[in-house]
Amino acid sequence: MASGGARGYNDAVQLGAVALLGGAPERASARWFARYAGVLLAYLLFVIVFGAWVRITGSGAGCGDHWPTCHGELVPRSPSAQTLIEYTHRLTSGTLGLMALALPLWAFRAFPPRHAVRRFALATFLLVLVEAGIGAGLVLKELVALDASVARAVAVAVHLTNTLLLTGSAALTLALARAPLAPNAGQAARAARGDGALLVALCLGLVLVSASGAVTALGDTLFPVNGAGGRAAPADHFLVQLRVLHPLLACFMVCAAVLVALRFGRTLLCRPAACALGALSLAQVALGALNIAFNAPGWLQLVHLLVAQLTWISALLLAFAWRSASSAGG
Image (tube, rainbow, N blue to C red):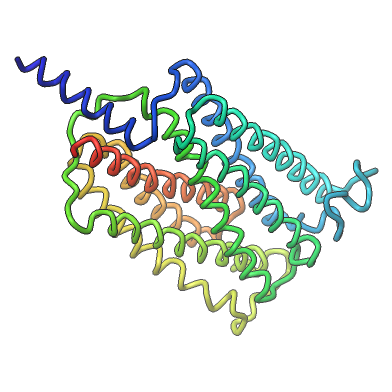
């Protein structure tokens, strides 16, 4: 009797996931698509971290003010180290664009009409195009290298926000493609009033703190605390004055993220994402403290950025798991 009830519940969870996603795709096709989506997400994170390395090394102007060519050439001759870094970043970004183009083409063949995977796969490709457009604008407007203008700070914040939307879209594409293959939720979520709003507020807060972190990282690159590179940090420059804002926002959001993780971790389906959110948020506190203690060395900034992206993804996956569990629970 108990086993029959468990099977019935698992069937209900499967039906809930199918209803949420808009139809069940053929299993083998969905499995291979999910693997590809996972590879694309991992490669996307690599491209994002490499893009930060371009900023840290001051290589954004490595190809001059030319785009998509490099110094007016398809392949630069006798390139400097900065040119090689920028040119390599353009090549890896171009490869990402081709991979992102394949994503919706495959999704439209593998999944039925109105399936959510189709929408998020297409959104991923479009956001890659926006990402490329922002990067091109930074180069063409010469908001790179040692530029410390307000325009560059705003562009960096917008760039980071779009990057979060991009990684989120890619992660949800993967989650939606895999959802029909993992029907055993184990426990339905009771959709308490305000839970959805709480998750939305958490995600918006993470976007805000990440954007402030991008501006802070720009200030650390242009005006190192220890005066590395012979460039002193003017006390009245807005990038220097804003340094204190990011740690305060980050500490607040870490506390909020841990509380959210504890709240939603009581539901079995939400528990993996909730545990990841809590652990990654605490790791960010440690990485932030190390950045401050060691004057934000480049390699540590890259680790900090990667963990920030993973924290954002875990928050989105938590929201997805909560919605799936709520749907399955009726």
